Image (tube, rainbow, N blue to C red):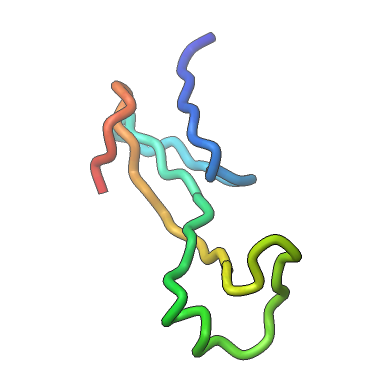
Length: 67
């Protein structure tokens, strides 16, 4: 194993940067206020007010969040 980063919200995409950091795409739980202003989407049975958006984070080789 060369490198490992664990986060339950990471989904299908990442990109290693020339500086050694990694960009990862994460699910982000949106606030109820923002969720109520979004038309469409799908609600979950367990929490109809919960909606996920996307977030991009830059992760350093030590696992810390750079951005």
